[in-house]
Length: 146
Image 1 (cartoon, one colour):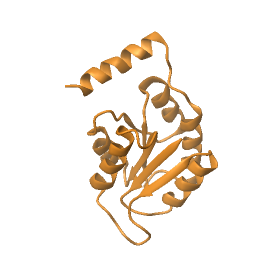
Image 2: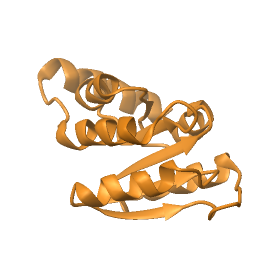
Image 3: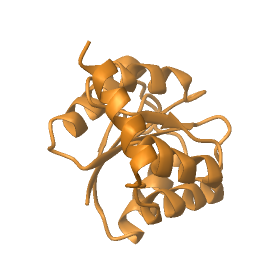
């Protein structure tokens, strides 16, 4: 898969995310500042989300200090279902029940080992295709079309 990830601050998670994505066998592109620089989270997040929505990338990972702003900004892009995940079980549920295509992480609360655990679960968990879940996702698509 092709994965895009963004952050408003380079921090220690950027190299850890890149390593975990590549270790899982995926291509990845980082958009955001280099070490010692900053960029605005709405800008880098919306760019990453738009590139997922366009189909250029299969999935995205967005990060900011709390993860909340990145989640909000990503979900403003039509076709994006971003989920802020603080642990692997939440990531699993976001994939199964919400068909989340963008993972949001808090740079403040997510350690490198936790990020690796969340990403491993995220990549290993397929969307549920049972009738109940399909109905829920169809409802989200209708909301998206408003």
